[in-house]
Length: 389
Image (cartoon, rainbow, N blue to C red; front, top):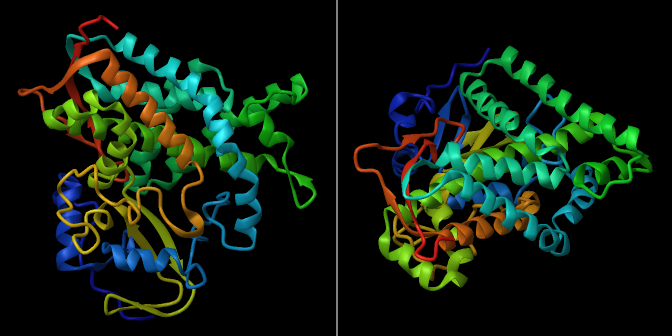
């Protein structure tokens, strides 16, 4: 047996979890390639992470014991499945789904109410993300709260490395998908929703297996409900604390798309992603062995002063070409066009229906716990727009 490696940090210690952004900033400056038993080698610098993203031969995505379509695949297998799912997020399909998202956003905001304290995550962010996901997949809207609870429990089990609980949660999600598939089989597979279309897809001349469909839909659901709701909380918190930026977006709503990219660079809604080394490599003067696990910390990379001048400043004129919000390379997020549209539609509706977003001075937000980002609980005041929209 080899000599055990000395740990550089503990990613799930209270001092890290209490303020993830600040902790990751410190790690990037003090130990940019850090080892822990929990995460393997964690990379914090933009340059190191970008190198890994563009070298899939050395740094593989095949990190899980379980099938993960296509996130956990390498070429040529990844290429086949990636080509299959990309049309689901085409410009035409995203544009066609936009009116549904507008209706969902306005319905959620109407239900949340204004002129009072609103717990943004519970009343707005998670319901919007879940309802949008159900509509996109063609699932019943009343399944949304169940998917939210499943996502939160899955995050907690991931943090605790509770493998029996994670296995039960995987079986539960498989049950949701199996029910949706059986309903469609009974109806003849004629629907145009994403789930029905996946059931008609073929790869290598055969239909997708149920296991493959479950994997695809699980990846989409975790990304939609977990990451999208985190992004909404981060955006609302940023605007509530920056009156000038809030006023600028109210005066110039065309800037909303740029603001979303920059706010989510400043405070990333997704903490990290994994890789495994296929051969020895050196990163930041640390020697990586074949088979070593790596964790790419998006939050720290997008706040790296070597990549972004004054990274803690929200600057809508900033060049976003280096923003790793959606990843980079062959594994760049295929659902980015959909998520961008959903966030823009939500923000436009929020600004149109309110005159001011304000923090609650005596009720502080509760940060989300790893692997989540943003806020678990976010109280804010939403003042009604003068026209009563």
